[in-house]
Each structure stands twice: as C-alpha cells, then as structure tokens.
Amino acid sequence: MWRAIASNALTLIIVILVVVSGLLAWGRQQFTAPGPLADAACVRVERGSSLSAVSRTLEGQGVITDARIFRIGADYSDKAAGLKFGSYLVPPGASMVQVLDIVTAGGQSTCGREVNFRIGVTRTDVILRELDPTTSRYVEVVAFDPFAEAVPQDYVDAASDSDLRYRVTLAEGVTSWQVVESLKRADFLEGEIAENPPEGSLAPDSYDSSRGMERAALIAQMQQRQDRILADLWASRQDGLPYANPGEALIMASIVEKETGMPEERGQVASVFVNRLRQGMKLQTDPTVIYGVTQGEGVLGRGLRQSELRRETPWNTYVIDGLPPTPIANPGRLSIEATLNPDETPYIFFVADGTGGHAFAVTLSEHNENVARWRQIEAQRGEDGVTGVQGD
Image (cartoon, rainbow, N blue to C red; front, side, top):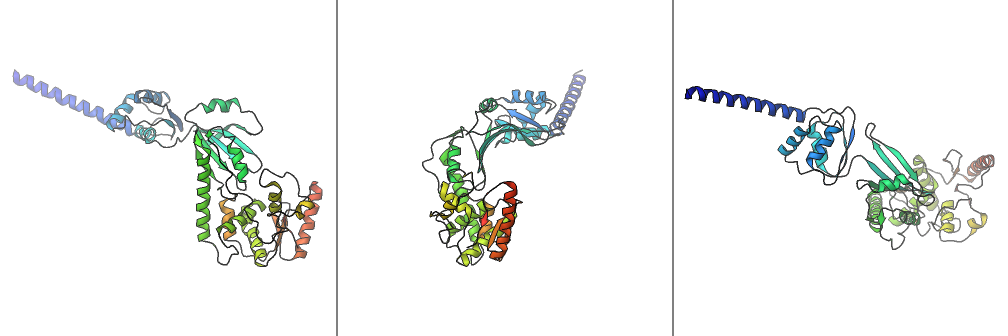
C-alpha cells in the first residue's frame, strides 16, 4: 500500500512540476511576446508610483495584456524597484519586457508636453506643445509673446505638471541684449544675469532647460558652445584669410549673418567682404550702421537715414576702415563656417534682388545696374532703402 501511495505522490509531484513548468513557459512567452498596442502610446509614471499601480495602469491603457505577469517579470528581472518618474513613448507591439525597460531606463521623458522658449530677431515666443504618439510629432497647444500678451490659462495649467520639459532656442542673428531681456521673461528660470555677455559670444542653438535653472548657468552654456564652435572652425580655416585672430572672424561672421538669411549665399557674401578687406576697401554694409544706431537693443524697424549712414560710430563701416570693434549679433555655426571657408569669387558688390537673395557684381557699373533694378522693385512695393554692399 505504501508503495502505491508513494507512486501516486510521485506522479502528482511530476504532474505539478509539468504544470508549473508549463505555466512558467507560458508566462515567459507572454512576457517576451509582442504586445497588444496597435499604435504608439504615451505612458506616464507618476512620482512615487508602485509597480502594482503602474502595471494596472498599463493594462488599463492596453499597453500590456496581464498586470500580474508584468509584475512577476519585473521581480524576476530585479527591476521591480527601478521605476523612473516621467512620460515615455511606447512603440506599437512592444513586449512587456520592452515596456519594462522603457519605464525603468530613466533619462529624459520621450513624450508628453514641452515648452519651447524661442528667442528670435524680431520677437520672442513661448510655445507649449504636446507629442502625438500616433504620429511622433509635436502638436502646438498654445503660443504667446511674453512681452506683449497675457499668459494663457493652458500654459498656467501646464506649468503645474512636474514632468513638463523646457527648451530655450536662440535664432541666428539675435543680439546679446535681446537674449538677456528675453530670458528675464522666462518664468521657469531663476536668478539674475549680472551683465550682458559680449556680443557674438552666444551660440544660436536649442538648449535643454528645466524649471528652476539659473539664467546665468544657461548663458554660460551658450558661451561655452560658441567657444567650441569657433575654436573648431578656426582650426580648419582656409589659408590666407584677412583675420588676425578668431575674434575678428567672429565679427565678420556676425556681419555675414545679418546680411543674408539664405544658407546657400553665405559663402558668396563672405567672399565679398574678404575681397574688400584684401583690397583695402571699406566694407560699407548697412547692418553695421544699424548696430551703431541701436547698440543691439531691439530692431530699428525702418530704413536707414542718410544722416545715419554718414554718422561716425565705431560700427559704421561706411566711415571706418576694416572691421568694427565688436560683432553686431550672435552668428550661427553656418555663418562662422562661411566666414572661415568663403567661396572663391571675384565679387566686390552685392545688393538685394527682390527674391530674398542678392545680386552680386564685380564692377561698380554692374553693381549700379543691379541697384537700379532693386530701386524699381522698391518703388513697386512702396519701400525705401538699399540692402547690401555699396560702391565707393
């Protein structure tokens, strides 16, 4: 009888082991198999959330098929305590093991809402946008000018979200004064900026930020990035350029930046100024005159007057020889690169051509013909003022 009992017990144990093994294999297959998501989804892990709460949320959103298997897999992987606060984009068909990796990897959130504080030459914009998981593209929620408009309620409501990300973007050609004045309006930043940074020392680019970041620390990042860009491009510059040091190249790059917004023209514009310096000609470029009038504090907003073209300022290149004493804006990488590796051209003159670009010329007579055509376009548009390098 004991032999029969032992045999039955052994059989029962074997059956249990087979069942357990089957369940483990099934659970492992469920944990690693493609998940139910047909479209990407944004998953939020609240600060201090438990694995149990997160797993139920994931199951409720249709991201995973079984919260219990997810928890067991997390325990087995030693990741149960590794949840990271944030919002994360989960791709279609992600398995439970992939979802677990996403919500425990940490780092910057990959979906949710973002504020882009954009500092432009003519205006500053605060843009609140949200990632659409189905298209992986950001959709604008609200945008406003912090200098001219009341703060929208949508923005106020979003500011309470501890997972809200912040970005500060500088456009090419902004002045240091514009940057500082705009950053004063960035309500998510803190601290004072002791003084305006030197003109040209800030790299136009996009910078990750955060609520409570010091304004001075952000300015320091901009300066460090510009220093690296200038040093790298100076090291690979053309031979024989008429710049005594990187500072002079930065001055020229700021002029190139303000003279054209067309990337394909920068090398030609730089070549004109290089040719003029080599021939001992005055640069005679309007943006330097404008800087002498405004000192970089805002936009002139009108055409230059003849009296201003004749006025003696350190930046008026119709009056002074060579380069002005400082940059006239913060140039971007492409303008610095064009300045240090300009096109090889015979051009000495250029003027606006009515298309957003410029007409270039070798001789003064050719240039005068281009100017006459531009004057006709101006008359048709009811505008006034010539843009570009003028003749002696």
